Structure formats: structure tokens, C-alpha cells
View 1 (cartoon, one colour):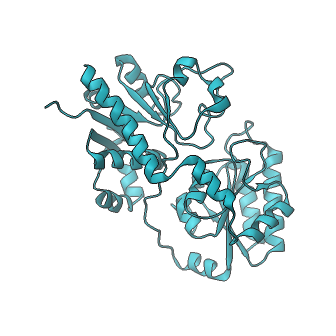
View 2 (spheres, rainbow, N blue to C red):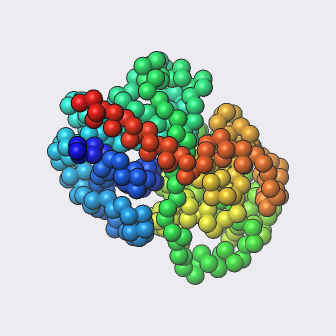
Length: 365
């Protein structure tokens, strides 16, 4: 009997873990392919809950040093039959792009998994003309529709739709007295996300100023409302640091989810959601994180079609209407979840797509 084909994945940080580990664990459970994942050892030290997740899921990635992850990757890639990645080898702009370059050089199979609901190069234009992907299989969350024009016909033909696959599998976090006391003081709590990390791209100073003016108004008018403001992945950047400090000095009912400091240090998006009743976010994966956790979500009015059916927040009146609706059922949230699919079925669908490709290639070789 032939050995099962080997799928390799690199878990460099939490974005890779959140996006690919649920699929890898499902593949391991199904047992039709051999799954090997290398996880950056520093990540295991930063997020101590991961080891418990591995024990519960029955699939533990192999700890690997920074040297092995970034430089000594050739043997691991050669020994695999395919590599699961969230960055196509032709378009990877991260510090790990040399792995993709090596994969393309030796002709290694690449399986690309979408990791963002609004993702440049998936449903937002990256270049003026159509994109050619290296990956031989592309797994998207929903049908391309008009976004088919973003890709060459050859690339579009390699797309398979599997639905939303980003699953929260970390247990609830435990917080200290400061967080617990803040939660107790505010009976209604809202998570507000911002993503001002594109400089002069998607957002401008005017957008940033409007956001913080809106937060100032909401916090001033609703003293019993607690608002957690979370920047993208909790990172603090120069273009909003001073705004954060000004709000914190003025309003006791605001708390910030900053990854490296503060009472919510190291919080994930789901940790922040656990502390709140609803969320307002840019058009982003965080919207689906919220809806799949069973809580209502609204998006800032950016004139984007992705979540056009959700409440659109452009001013204080729209924000207050959304806050007032928290706790009332709304079929629009069920409709969005139905559009992106049942998570458990999606994971099986993604696993089956990967298995079919790898086993078919094995039988043909």
C-alpha cells in the first residue's frame, strides 16, 4: 500500500494558526493524508493556550526555531507532496517569501487558503491587470462573481469554494481585576475595531479623525456604555497612538485592546468579543468572527459590497440605532452566516478538496 501523501504547513504566528490550524486538524482527524505542521517556537511561548488546544484536537504541530522557519526550510519543503499556505508564492510580501520562491523554483505543489474576508488579491484588486497565481489549488470562502476579473482565466479555473474556515478554538481567557471591574461597571459593552494601517492607501487622516470623533461622541453621550477599541491585531501605530491616549484621558468607559501592553495585553479578537455584546468593524474578517460567535455585527460605511446587508455605521445616529438594536433578533445575521456556510461542513469541504487533489496526484504519479 502506498504511503499517504504528506501535506506541510508553516504556522509562523497567530494569523497562520487561526487560518490554517482548523483545516489541518480536520485533515489529521480524517486520516486520508499525513499532515505535518511546523509552528514557530516563540508563538508557543507567547500563547500558552495553544498546547491545550493541541491536546484537545489530537494534532500537535512540531516546534521549530526561527532559523528553520526562515532559512533552513529546503529539506522540509522537498519532503512534502504539497504545502498549505495563506500567501501564494508569486505574491508573498512577508519576510517568509523566500520559502515561496523556493517552492516555485523546484516545482513544489502549493495549496492556497483564503484567510481574509476582504483580502487584497482575492476580492480586492492588487494590480491593475489580472493576477496569475502560482498555487495549483485555491480555496476561497465564497464564489468569485465579478471578482473573477481579478485573475487570469487559468488562475480562476483553479479556484474551489469551501466556505468560511477560520474557527475560534482557543479557550476563554482569564483577566485580572482591572478588566473584571470594568466589565462589571458597564452593563452594555461594544467592541469597535479599526484598521488604520494602510497609511495613504485605504484610509486617510480624515477617516481617522472621523472615527475618533465618533468614538468621543458615543462615549460622552452614553456613560453607561463600555467600548473596547481594538486596532488591527492589537498593534499600536503612530497614526492613532495620540488619539487613543486622548480618549483614555477623557473617558473611563473606554478600554483599549493593545497586544503588547495594557489590561488586555495578548488578547485575540475572540477574547475581545467574549467581553462584549456586539461589534462594529471595518469590512474585515472580524465581521465574520463576530457573527460566527453568535453576536450582532455592523460595519463602517465604506461603500464596499462585501457586507452591504449589515448595518452601515457612518455617523452617531447610525451607531446609536445599532446599539439600541443589540439583543433583538435580526435575520440578516443568519443570512450572512448562511452565505459563508456552516463552519463544520466548511472544514470538511476544505479537507476533502485538499485530499482529493493530493490523492489524485499520487495515483497519477
